[in-house]
Length: 280
Image 1 (cartoon, rainbow, N blue to C red):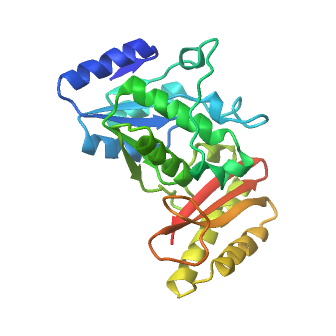
Image 2 (cartoon, rainbow, N blue to C red):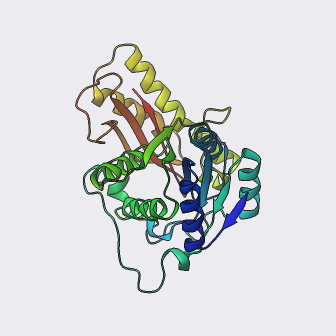
């Protein structure tokens, strides 16, 4: 397995792979790899010949006073996990390599990104689309694999690919959960045992909503109210949003339509911001 930091070296490798007839899969990550990330590598390996995992904590998707400086970084462990999972290349550029002095070009999707996380983190998704487009241009993947836990991000990237005529296919892998039901996330390491115990109420609230829909509830307002009520019982949780949205456009739903919507939740658990979602 190769580890590459320089953009021109990564581009040369990608060009050589494509010239040799290999299908390239990309798994974009910010490192601190967990089973969710590793499952995406598995998907990429099934669908392509060569898998590139990018590890880059992208500063442009963090806002002021967010956790960029303390975001977990464990490159050696991550590289070893990639090796064990069968990745072919780890692309780990520096910030200066990706955003040299004078950098001033950004890519913004302006519809899907306007709601949900776009309200409280107005520059976050612009940073995501910008870095993903750069990674696509650098690695030239046939397929890029993302995780469903970041539902809005997946929808935004899919829209960007369509709107900008990018040939990369976007594949979305299912949310991976720990044995207790909590969605895997790099930010879970911030949680103490007590905080994690309360954070479990997020995934529990999603299941409550799913059960309500399965029992015939059609009222979006009733489902949202029940989820907010359940979360409000935890003294460490502060709700950022609870919304039922169209799974493609992320527009708020007025009534339940089975198989076309997701219930999305974002909440603070003390000082840790977590997101999760479930298909309804």
